[in-house]
Amino acid sequence: MKRVGILYHPKIAAARPLAEELTGFLPSLDASVWLCSAWDEERARAQVEGTELILSVGGDGTILRAARAVVPLSVPIVGIKLGGLGFLTELSAEEARDRLPALLKGEGWIDERAMLQAELTGKETFHALNDVVLGRGAISRVIYVETTIDGTPLTTYKADGVIIATATGSTGYSLADGGPILYPQAREIILNPICPHPAFTNALVLLPTAVVELRVRTDHQAMLSIDGQIDLALESGDTIKVSLSPYVARFLRAQPPTFFYSTLMERLVPK
Image (cartoon, rainbow, N blue to C red; front, side, top):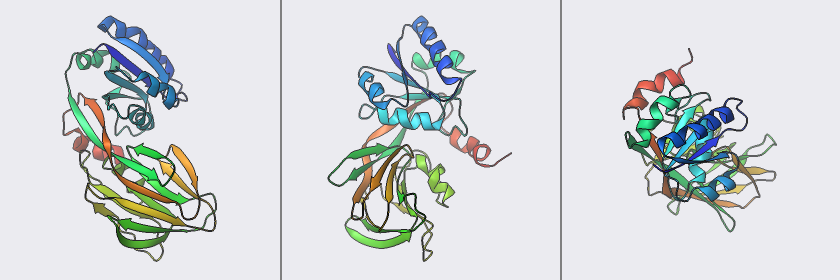
């Protein structure tokens, strides 16, 4: 690999020093390197063309930003863990120098993950690796979410909101709301209401081809959240159309394909 990008979390104290250390180390492996804060997605996106590998230095949140920054090119990502749970990260900070030479030589395998595409009608289109959430704003009152699947009305949720999640996002907010865990490479879509009333609390698992439309009705503020990192205020009547993205996130893995099962309990069960 000749061109490597390094994205780091700007608010984790150890992230930039490690990123700078790797920036000095990688040229010894015949790789050119560019460095950028993961929070500056526009600047990162401008440098992605021609990049063959992204190193994400931080936690899972840093990887979410990296995955959006490389759309539509789907450059493989290696996550170096400095954060908490680390469902998506691959290497510890201590392992990075020892393991990266083999990965840059082509060892490992590609873990391909589905992403979501969310279209805010008449406005913007977003891509998310974890989830798209239509929820209430700062005022603690329910909102009404008219929900349609493939053009067929499902229900109007009276709730704090609705989560639409990928398999990757199934271990995040959706899980905290009682949703199922999907195998990481699954392409099914989770539709999960947040604290609905009357209480039909069950999440639905939808086909990969499903198109979900959410129309919000509220007398106060509602919000659209993309991966918990991009937030937009919504007005009553706004509609969001969510489906699988035509793009995927790709991760270069050194761990065996069964690593998800072997690490699931230790990441979810407090010690």
